Length: 346
Image 1: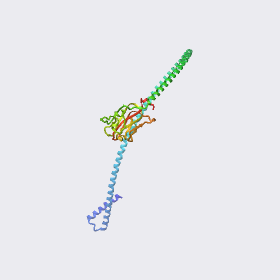
Image 2: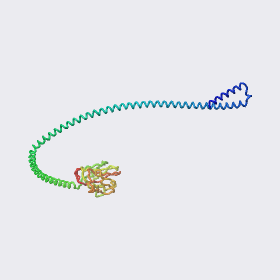
Image 3: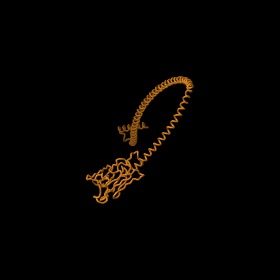
Image 4: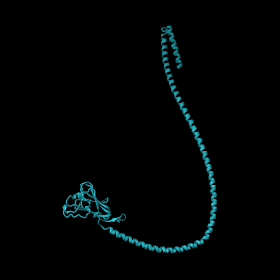
C-alpha cells in the first residue's frame, strides 16, 4: 500500500509540473484541483509513513543494542560456565586423588593390623602355655607348703590369743585412766568457769584516752581513778573529773581493758554542779557493740547486759555525736575474765 501511494505521488507531481510548463491550468481547472488535493493528501501520507519509518528505525536500533547487550551477557555466562566446569574438573581430580590415597592408606593399615593380630595371637598362645606351666608348678609348691602353713597358722593363732588377752587388759587400764583424766579436766574447767565468772570491777586504774583532750588538768585517766564522791552539788565538793576541751561533734573517751572480758554492766557517774544535759545523746559501746544511750540528765547511769546476750570486749567507749562536752566523774566497767577466744563459755 505504501509503495502504491509513493507511485501515485510521483505521477501527480509529474503531471502538475508538465501542465505548469505548457500553461494548461486554464484548460482543466477542476481536474487539476482534484489532482492537487490528491497529491497533497498522498504527500501527507508519505510524510507520516516516513516518520513511522524513522520511528521503526529507532526501535530497531534499540532492539539491536539490547541484542548486543544480551550477546555480551551470554558470552560472560559462557565464560563463567567454562570456569565452573574447569573448577569442577579440578575438584573431581583432587577428590579422586584423595580417595585413591585414602584407600591405599586404609589398605596399608589393614595389612598392619592383620600382622598385629597375628602377633597377638601368637603371644596369647605362648602366654597360655606359660600359665599352664605355672599352674602346675604352683599346685606342686602349694601342696608342699600347705602343711608348713598350717603349722605356722596354729602357732600364730596361739600367739594372737595371748596378745588379745594383753590388749584387753591394757585397754581396760587405758579406759580407766582416760576416764580419770576426763573427770580431772571437767573439774578444772568447772573451777575455771567459776573463777572466770566472778563479776568484779575491771576498769579501775586501766589505761584511758580521748580525742579532744583538755590540757587544764581534766585528763581522761580521772574516769578510772576510783574518785567519784559527789555528796554536795558544788564543784568544790566533787573529786576529780574528766572534761573535754570544747563542745565539738563526736567527742570520745574510752577505756582499754587490757584483755578480752565479758561485760556485765557499765556505770557512768555524771557531774553534779551543772550541765548534766551535756551527756544526753551519748552512746556507750563495748568494742563495736552498742550497749545503751543516755536519754535524760541524771546523776548516774547503769547500762546492764542481759545474761542471754553475752558480750565480750577489750575496749569500752563513750561517744557523744552531738556538739557537746563530755564531763563525767567516773566510768566503771563490771565484768569477768579475762578470756581467750577459745575460752568463751557462753
